[in-house]
Image (cartoon, rainbow, N blue to C red; front, side, top):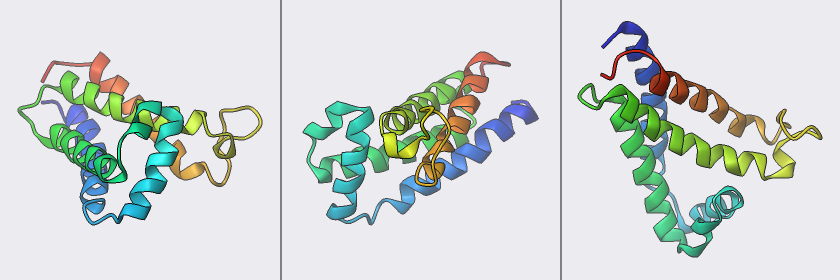
Length: 134
């Protein structure tokens, strides 16, 4: 694995893994709030219970972060997993008017924390499109 791929995988991998681990103790109210926000971008998550959504989000982030950090997972596969995760986050971002300014792209103060998922999407694209498969 090249140094460039190592950096592209390690930094978001650690970030996403830490985010998932941090959600392990999430209470049902927080899960319901996040589920409501996520349903704007991925409507099918509204059909889950808050407990199911909590597991889906938490274990999904842990799996994606772990795939990015595991050197035996091909780079393009890890990139595709990160791309799917960030696509879900960005769908919610772009479909929540309070998160973007009038142009529908630039973040508002409320949307700044979620706008970082654009960087994750860019890293995912770099992993899928560039370099060796491993």
